[in-house]
Image (cartoon, rainbow, N blue to C red; front, side, top):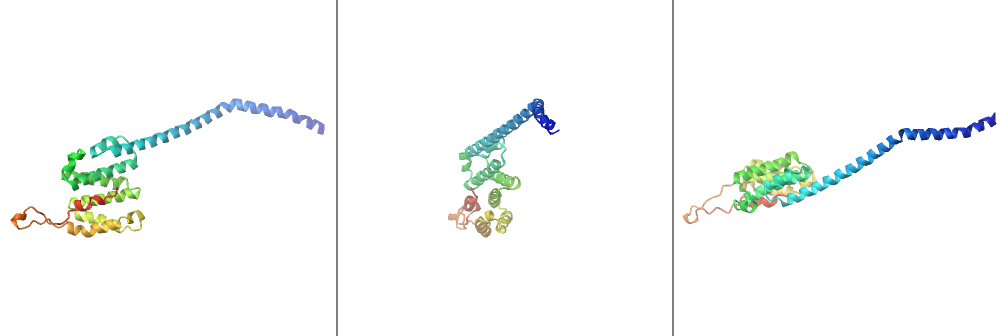
Length: 227
């Protein structure tokens, strides 16, 4: 009985091998197809990532080259759709309008602008509010936009709105990034009342048209916007 059992063992091995061969013949093509699909998907993902990075690099170059809100709109915002680049694009637009408010109409010629003071204020508000609303992270974007918006309110003589922003920054000391700008906010908040004073004209006829030495918000604050 034991001898007969041992004789059956060698006969089973070819059967197992044949079954394996038949299984491979039946399903091998599907296995290779699945493997090919996985490899293709991996390669496509890598290609997409590289293309995405290349697009972002191109967007940064375009943003650096643009020198007016119109060119930023045409070459960056309508072409590339990268949140991190778009945030910086709107910040740059806001700062350009702030420079227009600070330096006066002469700034228009050097940067291809035709913005009046009213248009510059509206453009700066729109750009900075866009960042605060749609691109608040990382927090440095939000704080830069808030400070820019506060400076715009100063130029528009909307002192209460500017003060509200500075107070909000001062009361956010728990955030390390915001805390770095608390001193700036305190300085500007403490000087708002002084800057809000009307410019006086001397009663001496020889001095008519000469303003007092009161600093205007634009001349005192354009450099406070984080770069």
